[in-house]
Length: 445
Image 1 (cartoon, helix red, strand yellow):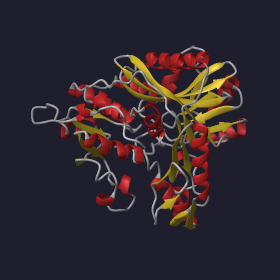
Image 2 (cartoon, one colour):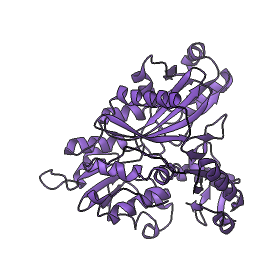
Image 3 (tube, helix red, strand yellow):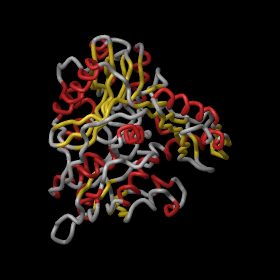
């Protein structure tokens, strides 16, 4: 990942509080880059063990990437406010934000209470709670028919209204956790029984057990990376979203930028901007997932944060703008000079998943993978970690990343590097592996 071309000198002498944080390489790198430009960073966390998974905090990459760590209940608004204000209630920071899906609402609420820059908390919550997004979009053609189900007795009505196939998902989760395609009533009942039992998020917040059902829409999925400033949404570009497919929808790779005709691009950007306007999202980054169907673009999700899975690296290397740093500029009250966005070359990332579950012993092939021209191998597991085989992105163990002359060559090189990697594990006993699944959860959120 190259150093962003833009000058982020406005960070000098400013302080930001971040409520929890993503762990992947680009987010840690972003912290270092911001601090190199003079930004002081406070990390607010409710549980350091969530990041370390039994390892020592002082050796964790985040420990060296922030100026101060504050242990506080990050699900409690008043507790968060208490650690970022002085005795008179005045803010001790110039900005407060979060890229964690589970904390973006609280961060927006805290910023609003302190009079700091930030998005409307109601807009963030509407985006995060997926059935509320559907309701907010109403009868626009790019919405998807849906039904929020709170009891087993509603499944027959849902089948009549939506038909098969449909998508079943928790109304408020991340990393594709719990997302299922169901093709008949038996699968719908099975999905309901599983998902209605989820009474806590992957970060421990209470959940109702409701299940969101949506009509399945066939098509190619992309994401649109944006930054909204004072109600105007700037577009960095369009990212491919490669999926493993049915029955779950786990991301396995991305390329940037996706070439589109002028008409397709204009229609897509209009759909995204209209979505963000509909929910009142007026300030900050967003990662909006959209499918191109025979009847036009359809909104899948709008995530009011920067994208994960190294997608910020794709954007930075191709545009020279860092969505992470631009979002922090907004959070401290500065306006990043986003437009015009110029694309140079292409980039690709491949997400690596273990072929076997168990305790990691070693990773073979790293030297060969790293020798592939233009490729970085970015692993976030180490010996002794439990590797999962789950139907969501928490099982990802690392990435192969390539910045090249175009997106297709970059993708070929990232794929070539990924093929060299082999994760050698000692298989868990059945009871231990299930315990590991529960403990490791969404380790990268």
